[in-house]
Length: 173
Image (cartoon, rainbow, N blue to C red; front, side, top):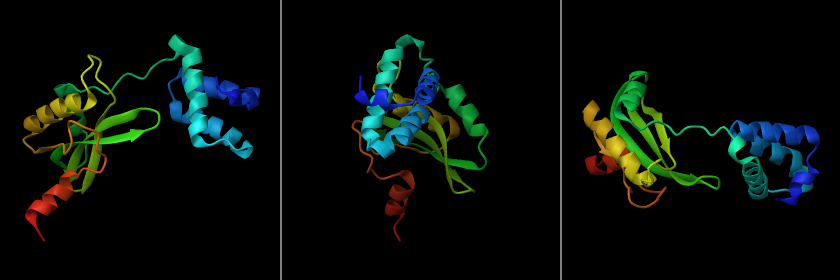
């Protein structure tokens, strides 16, 4: 385990462990980083401290279940959105905690914007996140009668063109 753990006050250790046990990784990370930043710890090292606590607490961590990808659940989410769904889109994102993952969103018109449908880190059956997100997104788009867009389903690319950008390029100025 990281030697930084020893520098945390007991109260902070309890806060970090409580956050980890509830699978609230960012809250745990915030506690570690804020407490140890005056000593020179960087964000990456703070992440290692939290990761070590996840390993130490093991099966006691109440893992957050993955977002549902079944059509009824996704369709129900879209019904709660303010505005009309213009498209369903999947795109890659990533961080140092989860590595690469796919965000599935409903692109909205009136009001312009997007609403989160699901985050796909991995599929329980081992299906890669790009494949699982593409299948779920395509099924939802077909159900809603709107386009589905996923510029890079086979490999992580967080710079791939988004639906609105690709649409503007094909429509021209």
